[in-house]
Image 1 (tube, rainbow, N blue to C red):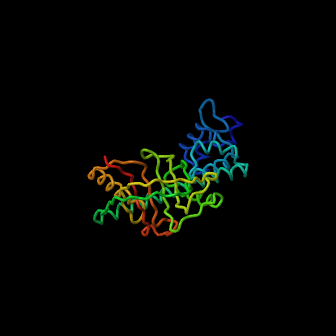
Image 2: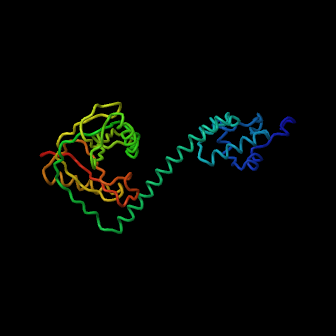
Image 3: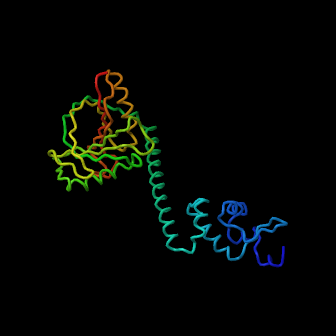
Length: 277
């Protein structure tokens, strides 16, 4: 070590003082997060200045709230820019909220599976129903995931007054799933609300005349985790009764989450348009 290196910290010293392992400090060096102040050309020792302790502490804090190595590397030059760091942390917080929602959904799914082990299989009765022609206010778009359907409902309800659309008495709230198969992202979903009569389409709210339909209908009582049993029953009924699918599946929300926050009281009609095969 040269005299100029006497006031530099070896990697082990930095590790103890920063509470970051030597292995991780080497990893951070390789990925541009925390470069040594100097590398001894003879020994290859990584040497750090005492001023880098503050950077190391901030890196550890950001790592502990979930930022990955690439994000840490982008953040290091911004550590003294409060506004830039506030933006980075706000974006990360939003990601964490989304992840927390996903985890909560999975926990509910696990609870449903546990309950299903302790209960007899759900008995789903499928009925054949003729649905008369309807006039609806419609809004159709692709959304990030099926779970984001509520965004379409919000937009539809905001756009109704400007379109002059008047909801019918006891209107049916319907979501139509237009993709020919299940998609992992970007589903094509249309939400419909019965209205008293035709109106002029305005903005993203369209007036749609839905023709009479023949549907196979299964009723889901409770949270949407149970929909697989209904779908299975629909598939069996269509095959056993000589029908074929004749259009996109849709849900009719008889009792929706907006009407009752208790999932146990939700009622959803799961509908498959059918025709004789």
